[in-house]
Image (cartoon, rainbow, N blue to C red):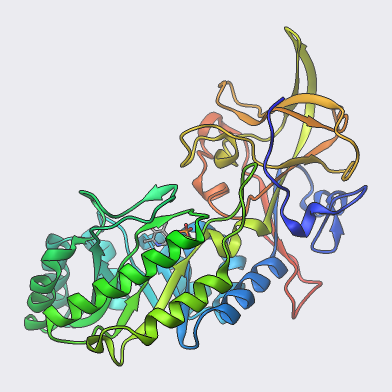
Length: 419
Ligand SMILES: Cc1ncc(COP(=O)(O)O)c(C=O)c1O
């Protein structure tokens, strides 16, 4: 038997039928018409944002990284609750222009093509520059368009976010401009007449180490102060990045956002004078939306093979790659899963839950113990709200796309938005 991660608190203490955003799993399947499907409970997202707001020092903005979950109704619902959006492509720019008009947008990510830069400059989006070459191209395109581009510099810091599942600092990197080269680049874009929007320092993703996040934010502020000194100007915005993780696996503990907020308040109070007047933001995806999602998939077959039991489902890694351990993890571990009509029942049956793809990688849960499940029963895979469908190889083997549903809007509890 192999352990699995903790079921998120909103679903953990249920008995009998799994209830998501006030409706049972069976209600949701009826609404979707079929399995597999994703349900996102927006009440959970709203609660995460409210908890973060309460923890952060006043005035520190919250930006949502759309890449975590670009489901249009979710982006539309989040927009009024956050202070900005982070996008990573021209496609995401089209999405946020439609779903969240008027909200400040910044555009990070390497390999921005000229047509994407043109769209961003035209839309007044802040481009987080990943290199000197991107700066030169943005300035030339701005000249051609007759628009002063809004440019911030993404800094490749000399430190990394400890404990991070995906490190994005402290090494040679396609992301950001090496810290020591930033003052000269800012001087160049200022001379060229661009609007310098500040600094973006994103050191890593998915860390559960509260102390590491606190240290990284303090180091980020110190670096921003030092760069502001050397630039000789206050950055309008210091984007402090994020990297807050969520518990996926056995033994994982949530980050302590209250402690992070307190420490950030102290660090801001003693920040360099060169930062006086700067605005601040954190940029998060997974922590805001990861726990809101549940993926439901039906058992098609139950088979024994050489002493092991397999529950073969109609879903798989083409929808929920992360649960198969093939997105951002080195060692495969089990996400929390459950039999939807047997919540809280004793786990009596050791099974491996697989998807319907012809690859041994397609395991949604490996040798876990669950209540007994038979063909026709439905398995819930939790923690499907971030880097789920949009981070999965949906075209592989030509299976249909799953339905996505958003519900649980606090001011509109009966509304359901579907894909
Ligand atoms: C620039 C940038 N911002 C935000 C994020 C979102 O990170 P997370 O979903 O871990 O909060 C990422 C993730 O890779 C990123 O690269």
